[in-house]
Image (cartoon, rainbow, N blue to C red; front, side, top):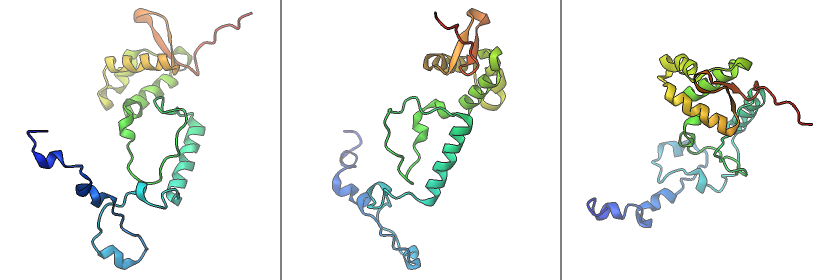
Length: 176
């Protein structure tokens, strides 16, 4: 910080960031579209931030339908009690990590499609290599995580180990 200078050290001072808190009123007139806006339109600072737009409402219904039909899993790192998502604003889902990567979703789909026979890490890695550049080591990491969180079950040991999605995993006999 010392090498960057005093401007860098004061970059978040209140007087330097005041413009971010200035909200541009949106009264819906066409004349406003041609006037320069001052500040950012931050929905978090908006008095009507609790309102849900028709687009966000439709998106929420669509996501609920997908979750109901395909049984998508919730974010395993999310707190158990979540506040409802804010309408609009920034989509920071990329910060959640790998669980949203298309390669990992494809790997999970392959695991599910393998049925009761299951599949191995090498087979998943080969299937995804051309499209995603996925390595066996990456797939092994995903499979270990899925075994830990209950998404998958490991069957067998060593080079004969197979992984089965929990929906297709053999059920232990009931205890008597």
